[in-house]
Image (cartoon, rainbow, N blue to C red; front, side, top):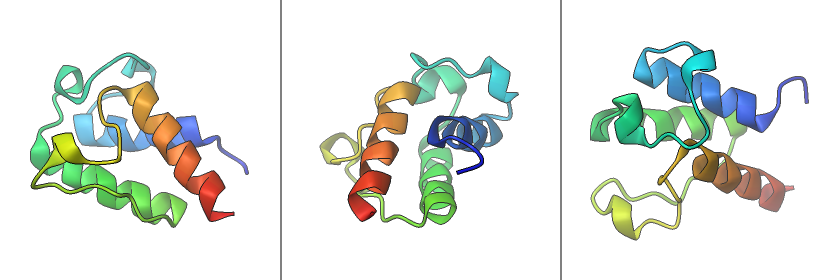
Length: 87
């Protein structure tokens, strides 16, 4: 894989936050990044497309989702898990 999952995730979140990837911290929340609910949904679609995975996320009940969106690091770990489970 030419680019790590973490780097690709940071690029996706940076695009949604209209920030440079270098500005994205692992402990940042979506709120810290200024990503609202619509931005989150767009990020989930971008993640699914980038990694060819199905993200278990319900936009109507994000707090009850199996996909941990509490921090950038937790989202990276969740995607790493989904990608490895797909193999």
